[in-house]
Structure formats: C-alpha cells, structure tokens
Image (cartoon, rainbow, N blue to C red; front, side, top):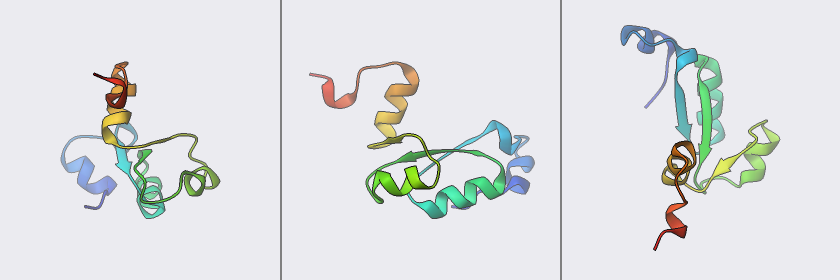
Length: 79
C-alpha cells in the first residue's frame, strides 16, 4: 500500500493529520514524501537503522505501539 497526499485528500484527510505505521526505511521515505507522520514497528530492520534515519523510537510491533498510545500495559506483561 502506498501513501500519497492526493489519495488522502480524496478521503478528506490532510497528510499532516495522519500517521503511517511501517517497518522499513522505504516506508519512512514514502511517509516523509507524503508529509505524514511515521511510527516504526517490528523487527524487519534493526532499530539502529531507524535511529540513524532520525526515528527516535521503534516499537516491537503494532500492538506494542497501540498499547503505549492508549496507556495500557504491554501485551507481553499481561497475564
């Protein structure tokens, strides 16, 4: 799936008001080109690759990012 500012505008959403959750540097580059925010997740790439590209935090997966966003305990920490 590709993100483009034009597609988002068709939906009535500005790119600046969106977040793309991705797991590669290509996702990061595409997101930056569209003008959206980026969240790095997963283990497809080493976290250091994202850090070198300017991403401050990398979550182990989408669930971990959602838990953090919602202020819930990590899924791994749940009984």
